[in-house]
Length: 255
Image (cartoon, rainbow, N blue to C red; front, side):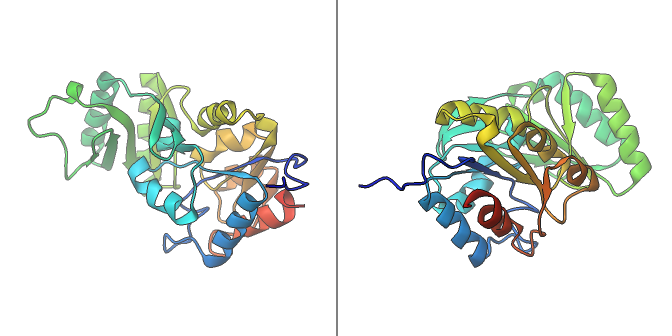
């Protein structure tokens, strides 16, 4: 098969896509136009990688919809997948920290959730008979629209130490092990694909995208992104409901 003449001369070789608020519109769908342009990029030899706070089981159906067989970063970088079903690296939260975070959630009386390898736990479905130390924890999260309460939780988390704190919406906090984020995950994907971080375009909308947006060759904020993300990005495109991903591919990758 004849190699496409531009495949080896593209400035960017990997497109790392956040999912909620970025790849997916507010109905949690990939539009036909976005899907079409992602497939155009793949046809031109561009690697497309999902880079999400979601668990792998939740991200996988969308990867299948797009026909992706490339590496994948899930749970904000706590997991890196060599292929959609082949785990490359997993980093767990210290159960002692999970216990502290759970106690803080109960004390503040806010909604919380925690991703474990086996399932999702939350305030309504917490541990019953299994000791907390026997669970493989990946990520902990809080959600409250009370800004003061969320700030108090953030301060308490920072005092704990050993935590990577971000968010996936203005009203939540997401916690991974210190040093574990999407930037670290995409750096590992680059090693797997033998490319440089400068050859990556990363697109996102929330604070859990900030590290990777700052670390890659072209960091892109969606039009619906949080203001901090927009300020740190190299480029701001249309919103997730207006096919901002199409703009990235058409105007900045396939040129």
